Image (cartoon, rainbow, N blue to C red; front, top):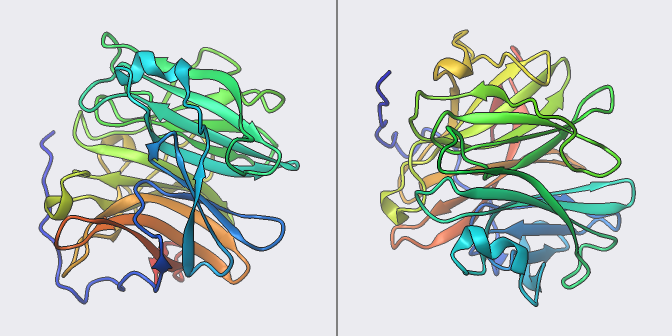
Length: 305
């Protein structure tokens, strides 16, 4: 199956990113609303970077998850301290962070778990390796996302390029992998797909992914796609019925005007409804945080506002 790179639509095709101020140069954001009503974002960077906000508009840098480094990750990063694509969540009074260690164009990769009672820098405890991939594997263990299903089951989706998006079951008591089963839930026959994010709304689990190419500044072609299923493990299908394991996906956001390559999305349930967080690039190639309201049309498909 060939992969088609779609040109950026007209600037009026999608809403512009909502207003954000302060320190909002982020890449691969994941967010939670804290018990006090403030917001915590984790994103790709040296030792995993943290940012906070009291109003979801003004953000400030708040240090890093591992100020002293994360030595257990260096076999996968060639000794570097940049860690990728964190997934931040809050369950049962503690913060959980799944994050990736890898290098560009390599699938010698690993996903690890850390937990914290507060989410603050330096309070995170390394809990162990969750899943790894090797050069001989046909998948890439990066871009983790945790979802808890209706029965209390914990699932981690992840993946980038290779054979696409995978899913494993987790042990809720430890947050680590519970069995050896590796499920496939989306793919483009080796084409660019990554950054899964699953949420349950109404009768459906929605799988958001990013198609096409990240990390090329203003030349990035990332775009946000979605499919849905009545089961957390799939099958996920697009609006037109195409299975996501066969390259299907319904586009809800793409580059337009001075917004280039929006993607690596994260759905946050907030007090006034869902919001979608993502990164995009400006005309000069600077990464920025994008935030938009997320609603659902009459047929139950996500729409940005």
